[in-house]
Image (cartoon, rainbow, N blue to C red; front, side, top):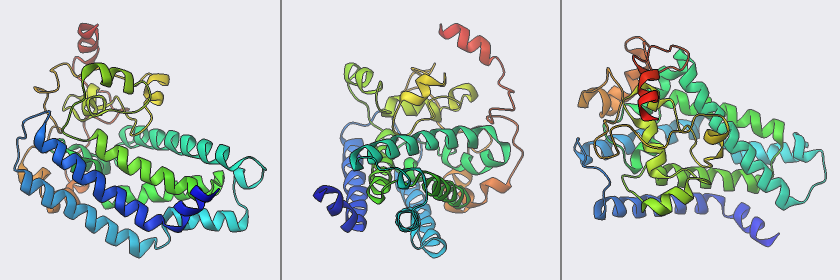
Length: 292
């Protein structure tokens, strides 16, 4: 298919173009129609959040120069994985691969909330004191490496077409920036869209300081998984404007907003809450009941 050939041939330009383009669009949208009033200097947060992104990209380029696309190309060459063993239409293999990989990302997200050791890494993402487009790319380098290794394993087992991996990476990146935006959609549009994809209001609930709200709405792209597996929550109890963003224990700007604090965060303190299998959510059941 000519379109798929074009995507593969221009992978780097396409990915970089979408990243810069969507980042600029979301940044402008946040300036024109912000959903919430920010509590921390935007300059401080953007410099440090994007600084972490560039640091992570540099380390990944050294460790995995071929990245996920390179592994997909190798799997195709060696005929590894499910879709390399069966003759199916390319469009079907691409569509199925993107959906399956999105489901794996959902499971991975639940896992980093369920395992206390992994939550230590993932709380860097949640400790952001505000919620905007840069939050979507704010992850500790060790979590990024873990995510990349999981992605490699899935690609080897699944054998997705190279173009499917490129499309998945672009869509995931775009959606992460979109649904972490400090923006809001008209209520009627949001209600329809969130049956299919994760909207900013849907995912913002996941960044609430409340333990039981944090452990909901795990999807990054497709919203089906949260509905299917019972992790969907419609709205935060306090409302989107009044809810507190972040996690307990990391409320200082130097702790939560500076890159030095982000890089050292996994090695500080104990994991006493938030992790799903350590249910110390005071009154969570009562809160859920009051919502109903």
